[in-house]
Every structure is written in structure tokens, then in C-alpha cells.
Length: 192
Image 1 (cartoon, helix red, strand yellow):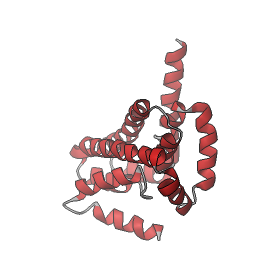
Image 2 (cartoon, rainbow, N blue to C red):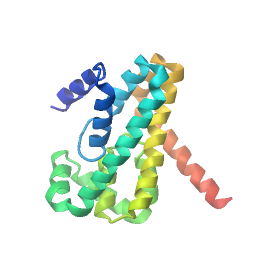
Image 3 (spheres, helix red, strand yellow):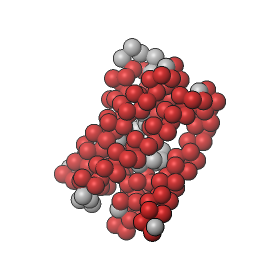
Image 4 (cartoon, rainbow, N blue to C red):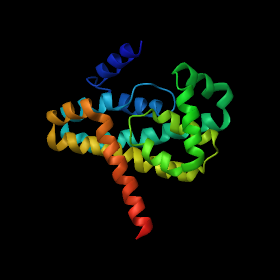
């Protein structure tokens, strides 16, 4: 079933309405949809490299707006919507681990998880469920989601097809390196 969704989303990248689909999928993925927007962003940026940053901006804005919906689900509708959604995607154990980590590290969790391909909806729902500061959540989401999508768009703009292959094979590595760099930068700034 997930593979079928993936193939449908990939087919949307060729549509004349692809930018609207990109925004819709970016929004939905941040709160309930299982397919990340990279599935559309990568082929769209490869097809029109001059639009890569505009597409990254679309992903960022829509993802952060979708993150607000995910936050609301966790904050106001956890028992009715979030818990069944987490269970449907088999994220129960991941969510329990996340809550433990979240209680201890909060902001750092948002910054790191927002960059990685780990389902962002876990972060958004958990932030609402934990009643994390909404303004800080939105700012951290804007930074991390923007960094992630603009990194992909920039690499695709300048390096094209070889980067697409590298990103698709090593997306976790790429986003982990960026995540460690961002966290390392915050640590350096804090202690300098």
C-alpha cells in the first residue's frame, strides 16, 4: 500500500499542477501523510533547476503550516486523532521513545528531527501533546524544514542528476550531517 502511494506521488511531479501538489504534500506530510515531499521536490528541481529555490520555499512554508496542524492534533486531539494515527503507522514505540527524549531535550529534538527523514509528524504531534512553546516550535520548524529543503534544492540546482542519485541512496546520511552541523553551530555559539 505504501509503495502504491509512493508511486502516485512520484507521478504527480510531471503534472502541470505539480507546485500545488508539492505544497499539499508538504503540508500533509507534516501532520498525517506518510510520503515526504522530497518525492516531488527532487524530480521537479531536476526538471527546472532555476525554480529549485522557489520549490524549496513552497515545501518549507507548507511544511511549517502543516506542522502547526500536527501541533494542534497533538495538543487538542491527541486521544481522538493522534493516537490512532500513530498506531496506524506503527509509530507507537517510536512515539514513546520520542516523548522520553522530548521531556529531556525539547528544542534540540525539534531542530534535529526536522532535518532528518524521520517522520516529521512525530515531532509536530509530540510537540503539541507535550504543550511545547508554540512560537519556539514554529521558529525551530521554520529553521530545520527550510534548511532541509533548501539544502536539497541547492544541491540539485548546482549538481543535478548525480546528486539526485546520491541523495536518494544516502538521504539519512546527508540530513544527519546537516543536523549535526546545525546542532554543533548552536553549541559553539552558546559556549563562545
